[in-house]
Length: 156
Image 1 (cartoon, one colour):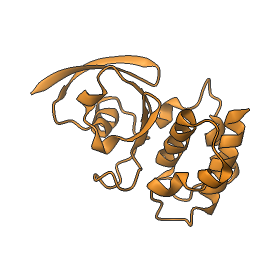
Image 2 (image 1 turned 180 degrees about the vertical axis):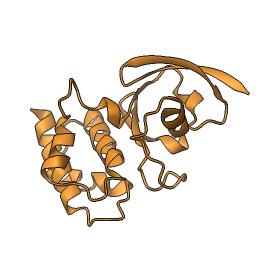
Image 3 (image 1 turned 135 degrees about the vertical axis):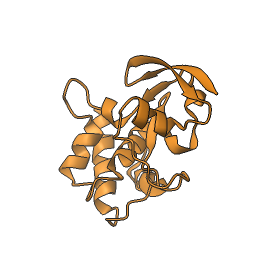
Image 4 (image 1 turned 120 degrees about the vertical axis):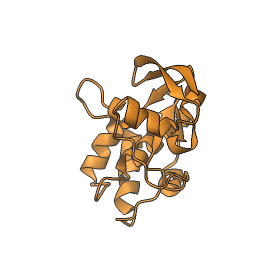
């Protein structure tokens, strides 16, 4: 059964019909061709599919597209502004907070979402931010450094 859904994705209004069982990650990737949001596990464990829904970090494999009705959705493709990297993206680049890059969009969106919700957060608490997402390539040290630098640069 098809259901109408209207939302704003990366600042642009979107109205379309979706199957009632379509996951938000499927909608973004398959209908809107926003493939930066990755599917890693389909069980909301890895965080590769993390996006922002009304400013809150959400694992899009655990949300139906129809549940985003009226929401403001931001994906990794919507993070940069006028060709300039978001401070968190620049920090990940500077500190090489990635290896293969598959999990990187999820980590970026998670960190940006945490800072939108809690703009003033201690460096000690920032160390825990990446803990809800998985990276199979690295030991998280550079990811933590990048999140800390990105937070400092976002506050400026």
